[in-house]
Length: 202
Image (cartoon, rainbow, N blue to C red):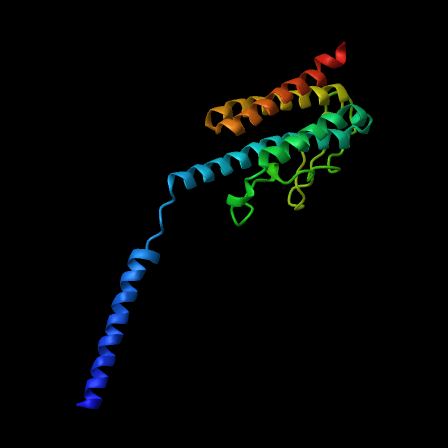
């Protein structure tokens, strides 16, 4: 009786443990927990911050390409380029906590300064464009830049206006504090566009 009873009790305990484990798995780890409303809002805001930073980063890369193609413009463009770099940092602040584990961004949203020094000016005259990296070389392809400095500035101004428009459109989806930041960056972009074109003609 003693040995048989001990074996029986062990079998019952083992069966109970299996049942308990099954219940725990089904109720806890078997099905992913749905994020709360606050968590969903935080994830959405982080994604918005990444997109907005990427938008300004693309403009920053165009500044770098123009500076590489037209070094004499450095004194004029350096302060504006520095402001755009600050915008990238401010817009992306707080997004890293919900960033994906793998970097799946396209080449035109690579990190700040990745396009610096890679643009080469064309050899012709007029409004030609810079030569991109050869296909299949593995190097990121920088924005094309007109060989005429005046045209390059006009294209840069157009990019600044476009970036400002994107930030303005994003205001509708942003929480209040971030919306104020986007509005400030958009206003700065409009001023940059003016300084790059109309302001230079005065």
